Image (cartoon, rainbow, N blue to C red; front, side):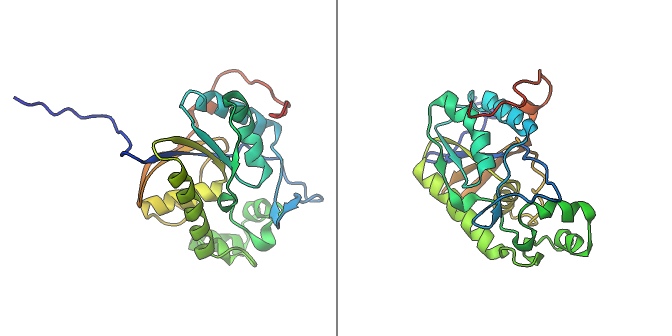
Length: 230
């Protein structure tokens, strides 16, 4: 008699496994000192806690057989990837289309203050699940289109490979929302240093995990205050 076991998941032939890593915690916003801007977007460096998270991400991903590393044009993703690329001997590739959503008048770190204070506009953004409510912010159509193009370019370039993509919370949320057909903000809660996973097989996107933080929990605190570039 034939037996049919339940087998573990295997990516379809030619598929690309993309590990979506949210950057480590960035430096706090000072009311008197907005973040520097790169092409109009806030570009804070990692805080000491974010540097520690970067090393813990490296400890985790070095065991997962990463074939390529991608970052965005914002320094917090580059710094988070630095310990891993150093250990693997890989050169990170910049994919600018996977940078964070542009927040118009709330750039430079003002988003944090506005969301903490929960004024009428912030409440409306959350209720309607649309960043474009912020004056001058990127439209939902533009944001969703560019991040999709960025991910698809990576998938085409790396069939049958594992790619670590160091990106941003809004991008992680958008990609997973597209993969699942969910509400736009259903996956916006990714923690700093967390790992989510999408398997891209042509037009089919398979979500394998969201907000994996097991590598951040427990264990000794190491390297606080040490730059990943050192």
